[in-house]
Length: 95
Image (cartoon, rainbow, N blue to C red):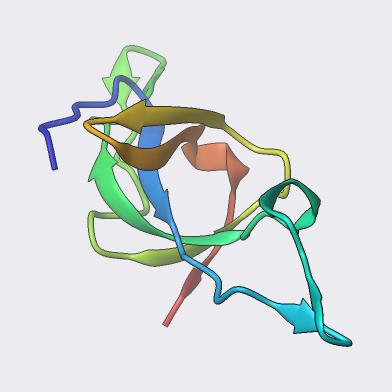
């Protein structure tokens, strides 16, 4: 994994891999599968500025999170699929 340093209130997430699903014996192609909405935080930005003060982030690297279905931007870095999204797109931390 390369060093990815997100800016401001952005978070880099590795989406959880879902096991290949078979329904009624039919193969479901990748294009028809639901996108996972859970992932593990890989890197966290320093936080956004509000009234000349930096607001600390509520998540940290290693947290398992839930995020909005169509949130963020998908990127591939060194062959690894990652998602970069804003902290506000994170719905919850999974304990």
